[in-house]
Each structure stands twice: as structure tokens, then as C-alpha cells.
Amino acid sequence: MDLIKKSGSLKLHEEINDVIAKVTLLIKEIPEFLALKLNLDLCVYVLNVVTNMVKSKKIDVDEIVISIMTKIFELDEQEVLSLKSQIAYLHSSKAVRKVSNAELFFKALKKKFLK
Image (spheres, rainbow, N blue to C red):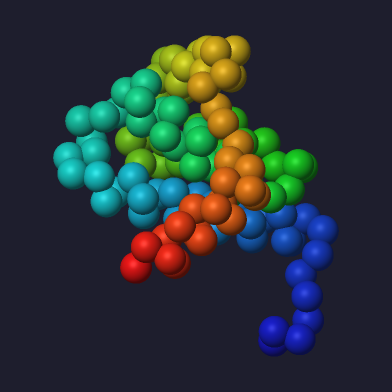
């Protein structure tokens, strides 16, 4: 039923689950990703990917990152608290970066013309 559009909380729920599924696959493509359980670099990567994938301002990016990491690594309460503090640190140090539309446009042009 592609003719009927999803709206409201159903659309948000679908977007959240799509982001979680895509980022989970990206992480699982990393060789020996289980060794990177609470690695700060992995946290920066996941946070940046999720930040750039989420379109709605109603979605809490930090909660999605925590859900992804908990789903993949089966984190306990102490590890979730550690992850939350890592995320807070990354936000305060401005390590999270939203890629602008201009950057995406120029990257696509460069890719197209350098083939």
C-alpha cells in the first residue's frame, strides 16, 4: 500500500528503526567489531553517522546511538552510563559534525567527473 502515506509517530518510528538497521549493518562490516565495545573512535563514528542520517529534529540521536550499541554489544547498565558520558564528552568537544548539503553535492560531483 504505497499510496497511503505514514505520518506522525508511525513515520518517526519507521525512521528510527531504519537508521538503527542501517547503522547496525555498517558496524557489523567492520572486521572484529566486537573488540571495539566501548571504543571512543567507534562511538564518534556511530554518532556522526546517526546525526547525518536522522532528518527529523524530534528524534533523539543520543538515544538511537545507545540503542544501536546496546543491541550490538549487549551493554549492561554500567556500560550504558559510560557510553552516555562518552556521548556527552563528544558533544562538548564538538566531535559530532553534521555534513552540509554543499559538501554532499560537491562530493557527488567530484565522484561523477573523476570516473
